[in-house]
Length: 332
Image 1 (cartoon, rainbow, N blue to C red):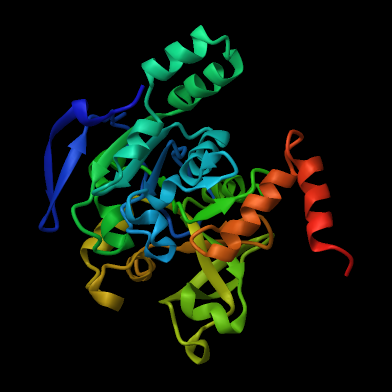
Image 2 (cartoon, rainbow, N blue to C red):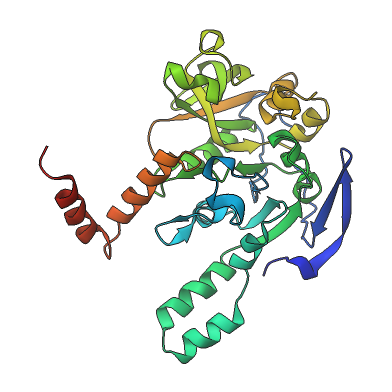
């Protein structure tokens, strides 16, 4: 069951921004205070995910002039569906999508389409019918509209009422993680051990560090590091390391107070990276380092790579596509 335009319950004024709020459920459970990384504590399970989807998608113009970038297909599924399925795969089915103007098709995609289902059933297309119903039933999806893009930190702050005093996941739609990567599951396990926020980290080329938030760190065992400092999109010569923050975050509710204390940064926006740095003043923050399994589908080349690789893995498309590519590319 999802919330849609018919479920509007009011408007939420947050940091001077008028946000349309859709119906949503709250469990009322409280997360115990974090303890700076100790392991002798009880950590509340992570049950909620926040997916910011209010961006304009300018890197894919003109395709995104009328179509939300989150709805661009990877083979035959929109990118945002892969993100929702990733959350569901680790047991998170309470999902809040931060949307904006022109994003109504996202809501329509995850809603029931009775007319389409009627014609599929009438035509005996039972497999397609089952797929459409599964999309609508996979999770409890809620929506909040962000009136204008004021930065990722601000987008996350809009989720405060829905998240309440619980840890939660932030999943960026431009980052698609391969279903076999285990990145989010590893981050959640790290959060369960430490009770702290956990960031997804990946080594990037020196020339690319200015595209990411980068961290100074020290080893903390296995794939974990403890974050000592974090800088939003530093110049290569100023980067504290080559570990960049990717689009997955497990955050404690303390991030909301940190965002309130964060001044606008680069571009006049409230950056989540800057808020995490504020959070580090009161809580430990860890990073989960990984190597493979991420696609930046906001980048045209990576978008094409993801489309081809996902298609090659499918039994119905892979063999024929492999033959086509071999013929098209010809001998080395």
